[in-house]
Image 1 (cartoon, one colour):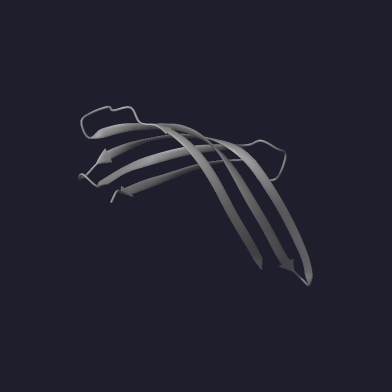
Image 2 (spheres, helix red, strand yellow):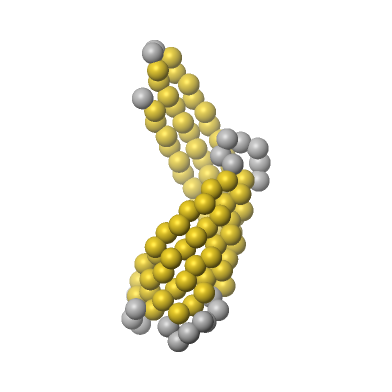
Length: 101
């Protein structure tokens, strides 16, 4: 039995140059802080590992306006840890849906 708790806080600066009338490139960087707690139980024994990892992030993606208030686009981000912990680095990809009211 393994329990994992991950919390993350991130601040980003994003640059949005226009590629076409309704399409923008998303380029950015940021700082993140990850708090990870892993606890495992096997055969009556318990092990626990914790890490607080500051990291830098690089972001690349696209933003396509579907309407005046809604945009959609893919994002890829790379995070690199700034300290030595078991939470080294990570890649992630997402489809982002923005709605502006």
